[in-house]
Length: 304
Image (cartoon, rainbow, N blue to C red; front, side):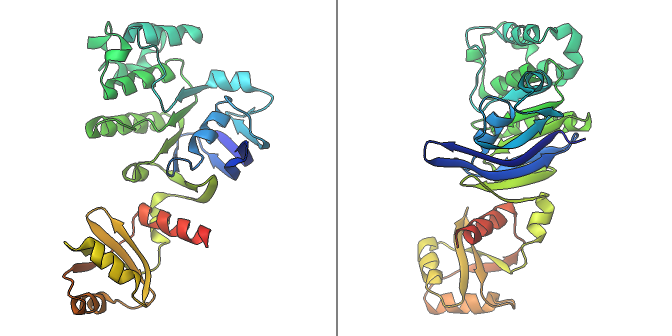
């Protein structure tokens, strides 16, 4: 039995097509990531699956409940952590989690084992107003509140946005433990460095699902030679390569430039010589594509 089944979902806001005929499935005991920039449609899908909004067309099931006919049952069986901190800032840490537990007719004591690893870090601050917590602590409180009623499926909409690097690592470690306990987790993120922590990912752009696969398989599907070019003349190198007759793609990529060539063979020496003749000094090496390279390639192909 699948935890989530999405079939041909479409959602528009006036004339804006936010979700365009999207389908995918999520297993229990799986972390499935919705990956894409702002405006890709990730939040709209989250809001549909948590029954906050209805799609224009299509069908979906969550925890074996029909998304249109059994929305009350869905709400009881899921945990949801929206992108923005949505707890009560004037209530203390303890008061917030007590409130969420009471809504689902349970208590902290009854389900403490579910949130122990997370909530134990909050207990020294349980009398502090939630609005005065750090970003990482707010995130942990929101996750504790989403888990306190023992949901079967967890929805996390960009949960690590604006959170420090250490808290992001800790957060994903918590998700891994929940996954091993059999929980299905649907998480959206704009951070490409978090992609490898998902079992499978759906790459999204402008409401379209470009590809669904494991991060490893997506990287292995990139069959062309990819080169990383380092230089102190980034702009000039980019502009020179854009006019080069053999250039396939060229992008600024962090501290380097990522380049693919129309030729099949290794062209490292050829590229170095070409740029050197144009009075440009570079270091070049062939590298393996990561998910971000593959995503940019898929975006380019979808726009052609």
